[in-house]
Image (cartoon, rainbow over all chains, first blue to last red; front, top):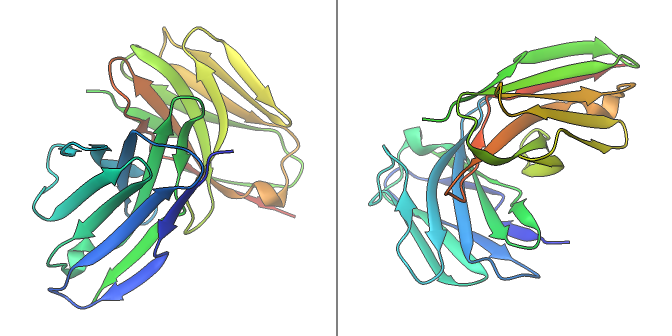
Length: 114
Length: 112
Protein backbone atom coordinates (compact mmCIF):
# COMPACT_ATOMS: atom_id res chain seq x y z
CA UNK A 1 0.00 0.00 0.00
CA UNK A 2 0.89 3.67 -0.20
CA UNK A 3 3.18 4.93 2.56
CA UNK A 4 3.95 8.51 3.57
CA UNK A 5 7.00 9.11 5.72
CA UNK A 6 7.08 12.25 7.85
CA UNK A 7 10.16 13.49 9.70
CA UNK A 8 10.99 14.40 12.32
CA UNK A 9 8.40 12.87 14.62
CA UNK A 10 9.32 15.27 17.41
CA UNK A 11 11.27 18.51 17.46
CA UNK A 12 12.02 21.07 20.12
CA UNK A 13 13.38 24.41 19.00
CA UNK A 14 14.13 27.76 20.50
CA UNK A 15 11.88 30.71 19.88
CA UNK A 16 12.98 32.66 16.81
CA UNK A 17 14.52 29.73 14.96
CA UNK A 18 13.12 27.93 11.93
CA UNK A 19 12.12 24.29 11.69
CA UNK A 20 11.69 22.15 8.58
CA UNK A 21 9.34 19.17 8.43
CA UNK A 22 9.59 16.69 5.56
CA UNK A 23 6.88 14.57 4.04
CA UNK A 24 7.83 11.85 1.53
CA UNK A 25 5.70 9.47 -0.46
CA UNK A 26 7.75 6.26 -0.47
CA UNK A 27 6.22 4.08 -3.14
CA UNK A 28 4.09 6.38 -5.21
CA UNK A 29 4.15 9.81 -6.79
CA UNK A 30 1.95 12.37 -5.10
CA UNK A 31 0.97 15.29 -7.26
CA UNK A 32 -0.88 16.85 -4.35
CA UNK A 33 0.07 17.01 -0.70
CA UNK A 34 -1.74 18.61 2.20
CA UNK A 35 -0.51 20.06 5.47
CA UNK A 36 -2.66 20.03 8.59
CA UNK A 37 -2.29 21.41 12.07
CA UNK A 38 -3.87 19.82 15.09
CA UNK A 39 -4.22 21.33 18.54
CA UNK A 40 -4.62 19.07 21.59
CA UNK A 41 -7.94 17.24 21.61
CA UNK A 42 -9.06 19.06 18.49
CA UNK A 43 -9.57 18.04 14.91
CA UNK A 44 -7.27 18.57 11.94
CA UNK A 45 -7.20 22.03 10.43
CA UNK A 46 -6.09 22.23 6.81
CA UNK A 47 -3.28 24.75 6.44
CA UNK A 48 -2.37 24.48 2.77
CA UNK A 49 -2.47 22.37 -0.36
CA UNK A 50 0.74 21.91 -2.29
CA UNK A 51 1.05 20.80 -5.89
CA UNK A 52 4.33 19.66 -7.36
CA UNK A 53 6.12 22.45 -9.18
CA UNK A 54 3.73 25.22 -8.24
CA UNK A 55 3.05 27.52 -5.32
CA UNK A 56 1.06 26.21 -2.41
CA UNK A 57 -2.52 27.31 -1.84
CA UNK A 58 -3.03 28.47 1.71
CA UNK A 59 -6.26 28.38 3.65
CA UNK A 60 -7.74 31.59 4.95
CA UNK A 61 -5.97 32.83 8.05
CA UNK A 62 -2.75 30.87 7.49
CA UNK A 63 0.32 33.07 7.10
CA UNK A 64 2.19 32.00 3.99
CA UNK A 65 5.35 33.81 5.05
CA UNK A 66 5.25 32.03 8.38
CA UNK A 67 4.61 28.55 7.04
CA UNK A 68 6.69 28.02 3.92
CA UNK A 69 5.72 25.04 1.81
CA UNK A 70 7.86 23.59 -0.95
CA UNK A 71 6.81 20.72 -3.20
CA UNK A 72 9.85 20.40 -5.42
CA UNK A 73 9.31 16.81 -6.52
CA UNK A 74 6.53 14.27 -6.84
CA UNK A 75 7.72 12.50 -3.70
CA UNK A 76 8.71 15.31 -1.34
CA UNK A 77 6.96 18.25 0.26
CA UNK A 78 8.41 20.31 3.08
CA UNK A 79 6.87 22.67 5.62
CA UNK A 80 9.16 25.23 7.21
CA UNK A 81 7.95 27.09 10.27
CA UNK A 82 9.91 30.32 10.19
CA UNK A 83 10.80 32.38 13.25
CA UNK A 84 8.91 29.96 15.44
CA UNK A 85 7.15 31.14 18.58
CA UNK A 86 5.57 29.18 21.43
CA UNK A 87 2.11 29.62 19.90
CA UNK A 88 3.33 27.64 16.88
CA UNK A 89 3.72 24.60 19.09
CA UNK A 90 1.37 22.01 17.70
CA UNK A 91 1.04 18.67 15.95
CA UNK A 92 1.59 18.93 12.20
CA UNK A 93 0.44 16.18 9.82
CA UNK A 94 0.97 15.83 6.10
CA UNK A 95 -1.15 13.87 3.66
CA UNK A 96 -0.56 12.78 0.10
CA UNK A 97 -3.19 12.19 -2.54
CA UNK A 98 -2.69 9.38 -5.02
CA UNK A 99 -5.41 8.81 -7.56
CA UNK A 100 -5.25 5.04 -7.22
CA UNK A 101 -5.22 4.92 -3.46
CA UNK A 102 -6.78 8.09 -2.12
CA UNK A 103 -5.35 9.87 0.88
CA UNK A 104 -2.42 8.61 2.92
CA UNK A 105 -1.27 10.37 6.07
CA UNK A 106 2.12 10.80 7.64
CA UNK A 107 2.64 9.91 11.29
CA UNK A 108 2.83 13.55 12.33
CA UNK A 109 5.39 15.90 13.87
CA UNK A 110 5.12 17.22 17.41
CA UNK A 111 6.66 20.71 17.42
CA UNK A 112 7.49 22.36 20.73
CA UNK A 113 8.86 25.90 20.70
CA UNK A 114 10.54 26.97 23.93
CA UNK B 1 -18.75 26.81 4.05
CA UNK B 2 -18.76 23.12 4.80
CA UNK B 3 -18.86 22.28 8.49
CA UNK B 4 -18.52 18.79 9.88
CA UNK B 5 -19.65 17.93 13.40
CA UNK B 6 -19.31 14.72 15.36
CA UNK B 7 -21.37 13.53 18.30
CA UNK B 8 -20.55 12.52 20.95
CA UNK B 9 -17.27 14.32 21.55
CA UNK B 10 -16.18 11.61 23.97
CA UNK B 11 -17.43 8.16 24.86
CA UNK B 12 -16.36 5.67 27.51
CA UNK B 13 -17.88 2.18 27.44
CA UNK B 14 -17.22 -1.30 28.79
CA UNK B 15 -15.82 -3.94 26.50
CA UNK B 16 -18.36 -5.78 24.36
CA UNK B 17 -20.81 -2.96 23.77
CA UNK B 18 -22.04 -2.03 20.32
CA UNK B 19 -21.38 1.62 19.53
CA UNK B 20 -22.71 4.29 17.19
CA UNK B 21 -20.67 7.35 16.33
CA UNK B 22 -22.37 10.18 14.49
CA UNK B 23 -21.12 12.61 11.87
CA UNK B 24 -23.10 15.44 10.28
CA UNK B 25 -22.14 17.83 7.50
CA UNK B 26 -23.82 21.01 6.31
CA UNK B 27 -23.29 20.79 2.53
CA UNK B 28 -24.40 17.64 0.74
CA UNK B 29 -22.30 18.39 -2.35
CA UNK B 30 -19.60 15.84 -1.59
CA UNK B 31 -17.71 13.19 -3.53
CA UNK B 32 -17.30 10.87 -0.59
CA UNK B 33 -17.02 10.54 3.16
CA UNK B 34 -14.28 8.76 5.07
CA UNK B 35 -13.87 7.54 8.60
CA UNK B 36 -10.41 7.59 10.17
CA UNK B 37 -8.88 6.39 13.38
CA UNK B 38 -6.18 8.35 15.18
CA UNK B 39 -4.17 6.96 18.08
CA UNK B 40 -2.65 9.50 20.52
CA UNK B 41 0.26 11.40 18.98
CA UNK B 42 -0.02 9.49 15.72
CA UNK B 43 -1.19 9.99 12.18
CA UNK B 44 -4.46 8.81 10.71
CA UNK B 45 -5.51 5.36 9.56
CA UNK B 46 -8.32 5.13 7.04
CA UNK B 47 -11.13 2.83 8.17
CA UNK B 48 -13.89 3.15 5.60
CA UNK B 49 -14.57 5.21 2.49
CA UNK B 50 -18.13 5.71 1.25
CA UNK B 51 -18.66 7.19 -2.19
CA UNK B 52 -21.53 9.66 -2.54
CA UNK B 53 -23.51 7.10 -4.56
CA UNK B 54 -23.19 4.46 -1.85
CA UNK B 55 -25.28 3.90 1.27
CA UNK B 56 -22.87 1.93 3.41
CA UNK B 57 -19.53 0.17 3.68
CA UNK B 58 -18.46 -2.64 5.96
CA UNK B 59 -15.09 -3.83 7.18
CA UNK B 60 -14.98 -6.47 9.88
CA UNK B 61 -16.72 -5.14 12.99
CA UNK B 62 -17.13 -1.71 11.43
CA UNK B 63 -20.08 -0.52 9.39
CA UNK B 64 -20.47 3.01 8.08
CA UNK B 65 -23.62 4.43 6.54
CA UNK B 66 -24.17 7.59 4.55
CA UNK B 67 -27.33 9.62 4.01
CA UNK B 68 -26.08 12.37 1.80
CA UNK B 69 -29.39 14.20 1.44
CA UNK B 70 -29.70 14.66 5.19
CA UNK B 71 -25.98 15.28 5.69
CA UNK B 72 -25.40 12.39 8.06
CA UNK B 73 -23.13 9.41 8.48
CA UNK B 74 -22.84 6.89 11.26
CA UNK B 75 -20.03 4.55 12.20
CA UNK B 76 -21.19 1.40 13.92
CA UNK B 77 -18.66 -0.59 15.93
CA UNK B 78 -19.79 -4.05 16.96
CA UNK B 79 -18.54 -5.87 20.06
CA UNK B 80 -16.12 -3.13 21.08
CA UNK B 81 -12.68 -4.04 22.40
CA UNK B 82 -10.07 -2.11 24.43
CA UNK B 83 -7.95 -1.96 21.27
CA UNK B 84 -10.67 0.16 19.66
CA UNK B 85 -9.80 3.01 22.03
CA UNK B 86 -8.76 5.96 19.86
CA UNK B 87 -10.12 9.14 18.34
CA UNK B 88 -12.43 8.62 15.38
CA UNK B 89 -12.64 11.30 12.73
CA UNK B 90 -14.98 11.62 9.80
CA UNK B 91 -14.03 13.72 6.78
CA UNK B 92 -15.87 14.80 3.65
CA UNK B 93 -14.45 15.54 0.24
CA UNK B 94 -16.40 18.46 -1.31
CA UNK B 95 -17.10 18.72 -5.03
CA UNK B 96 -14.52 20.45 -7.20
CA UNK B 97 -11.72 20.15 -4.67
CA UNK B 98 -9.19 17.60 -3.45
CA UNK B 99 -9.48 18.83 0.12
CA UNK B 100 -10.71 16.84 3.07
CA UNK B 101 -12.80 18.66 5.64
CA UNK B 102 -12.52 16.95 9.01
CA UNK B 103 -15.07 16.62 11.74
CA UNK B 104 -14.51 17.50 15.36
CA UNK B 105 -13.76 13.89 16.36
CA UNK B 106 -15.05 11.40 18.92
CA UNK B 107 -12.63 10.19 21.60
CA UNK B 108 -13.50 6.61 22.41
CA UNK B 109 -12.33 4.66 25.42
CA UNK B 110 -13.25 1.00 25.80
CA UNK B 111 -12.38 -0.43 29.20
CA UNK B 112 -12.01 -4.11 30.08
